[in-house]
Image (cartoon, rainbow, N blue to C red; front, side, top):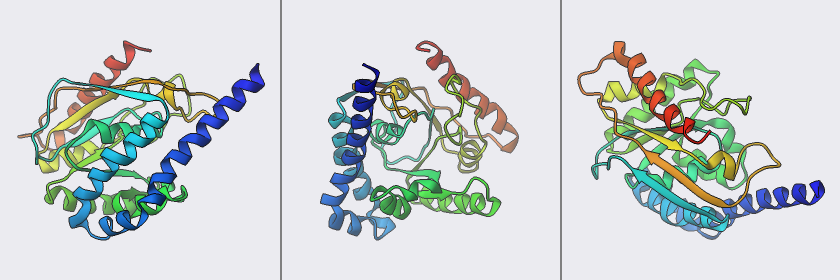
Length: 246
């Protein structure tokens, strides 16, 4: 029985990577054009959100349920933050926000075949061990915000090694950027992603994938000294929601 479960989990994981890669291969020439210039990015985002993410989630047998406690204003920039437990966080974040945004993520994802090629072209990569890299991230993020886009950062900075950790401590970057640009922070809780497709290899399966978009945290009038308060407030909102289902 254990062997059959292991085979099933393995096939499910292989199927996920195929769903990630096949649409990119099919749309490659189109995506190459849309990723060639930052001015085309909104169109690239539309394809990623409405075609690529949907193919992956529905193909995995996951149906999305999003509870919106506040709705964004079209054309306005936001800082999107959520708990991070799964590679499917990327797809659910795309489904959760209709306002185009740019991911800030670790450079290691560039190594993923096919996906990594476009990830490098359209996302803001960071080497968390390099001060120079973190500084460059701020400059690129500022440019994209000035273009009217939003930014998405998973503030835990990675997935905790201890699977019993409900929510790791948050890093400062997302909240410092939000205050500097006086844009609202949008806390989101991804409830089921760890169950649907965890980083643990022999686990996961189809089912509901819920997200809660919490009331936005305003930053107007805040300064750098308020960063810790904002960070703590956003983390507490997400943590309390996760505790309901832990």
